[in-house]
Picture (cartoon, rainbow, N blue to C red):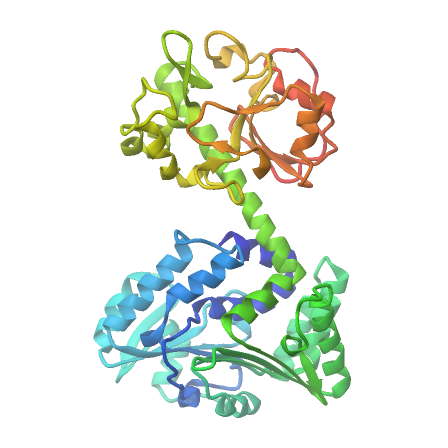
Length: 505
């Protein structure tokens, strides 16, 4: 997911440490009833290098609740592909009567190697059918069934398990595992040698303060436990440290993370008692409120929205190019009648090029957008045009109109040969502020010929995405002056444009 990609990039090596927890948390779902697990039953698969154990009950997973939380956080929507794939896999496991999914990982899993996955099921043969296509025949992974258990993981690890060869398990991990009775959960206990190795790696983070904090956290961490109790919808994170000073240090850092949000009640904040930090949250609404208060989650949510908007602009630009290939001219800004009356937007005209031919065929192209027939199609706005905060049937994706721009010029539609300033130096698309959104079928776009209109683009945003004729999308901040903006809009002004810093090409 875009959100997770940004979060991991934002946190650097600290993100890698948290990735295993995040990935497992994304698999956890809310159930209609509480069915407590027995995670300690997986202890036979642990050895002295094991440092993480997680467990999930697939038979009661409720993805609707998980989807709701993700949507509220701006992490995805109903079309989110990773979540859809996870849901499909869980449903297949339900059909195979799978009762538990366990994850067992050591230090190599944090560095990107796959963990050991153990699945208990009444029909292990059916589980094998679900996962065998996912395990390439020439890979280092292996999938085997043993009794009611299906094992997926590195071949050597599975061979050791089947041969009954294992070293003495990590004692602290076993201890925490026995204590962690819950519906779903994750426990961590890092042995001393990998703990020091991981701390050293974390210190290489380019962001020195983040690296030092992460390294201090790992060096001082004795054990960690995340559990989810279904009946009460209670989420609990419990971290045990080697001394009270480290616990106090981490507790203050965690508290500072949400300190700027005065609306967060005291009971949703972490507490420290001697060498233990505990963070309990009861209820989905409280969890949603807490996560929204964390600064880097807010940043990631905003970044995900921005990146989605940029992706939509790229898809529109591709449709423009495909339209030009089909008709040897750019799509007109508006479809007009014989007497010059504006009827429908270019957004309707390119529907066949964004996989919306069926919707395109529903329009009466000889009638205006608000005719008795066409007005009924406004609510069927394609997802590519949807914009947060724009209102039902409205979009922020618009062309830029000036007498010198691609879509603002009078006469016949522009062709590539007319753009003598260069396609990489000419803007034709923008994502405007929601306050300037328009009905997607209406032949209306952003009139950009004044400095006031230019300033309004940046009124509520630090950066604005613009689509260039060559198909690229770039974000600019207010360092993009009005004079340069006018030069970028002109298709044949002959100016030598000096572009400012580009945030994300």
